[in-house]
Amino acid sequence: MPARLLPARYRWLLSLIMALGTASTSLTAGANGGHFMVDDASIAPPSNCELETWVTRLDPNTVATAVPTCNFTGASEWSMPVRYNISDSETEAVGLQYKRVLWSTSSGPTLAVSAGTQYSLLSDEFGKFYVNLPLSVQPLENLTVHFNGGLTHDRVLDDTYANWGVAATLKPLTGPVWILEMADNEWRSDPVFAAGARMPIGSTRWTLDLGVARDTQWDETAYTIGINIPNLF
Image (cartoon, rainbow, N blue to C red; front, side, top):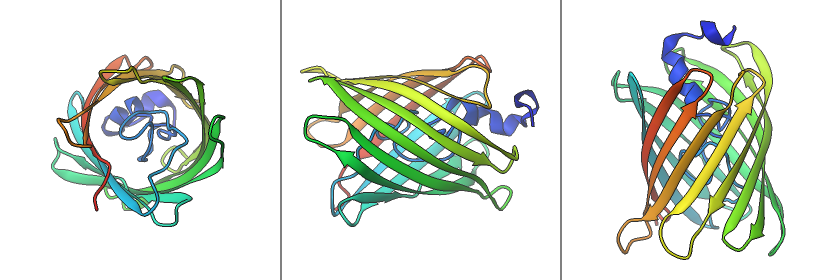
């Protein structure tokens, strides 16, 4: 199905590529944590569960997402994103993602792999399957660059296509962590650009995310606010 013929209720997803969208619009976890499009190569700490939540406004829809993530074995993590459309008062989709670090050194690049699927509760079927390879490189002490490449099989579009993205995470000595991103795939004709900031909430380990994404193909802008809880127990 050509992009211009995609039903309107799916179009808001195009602005939330999340590293494979993350998945070029699939429902995934990760992406520097939380809603950010381009994933990093890190995983949750061993024997730990965390929760990332965010709300995105892309007129005329407001959508909430919750992503519980657990690391049971130390080398990998499982995530289960759930997306709820506040505007329509219905749960739209659930997902399942597995992520594992393939290679890591104390001072060099880190490479991971993630794979997952999205199940649409609106159509009662699996909508997407994807695999993504995030690579994180730290050229400077306060700067980390992330590269993503992967494949998505979209059953709605009846197509399999490549995805890619690049992001930079800047961690100043004081103040928020800043993230700049660009993501695209073969199905689109123009990329999505995004910027965001992450800051601590008081004296807790919780963090607040603020983000904006510009879809240059659809000429639309999405605004996001999120809260991340790094330790559930």
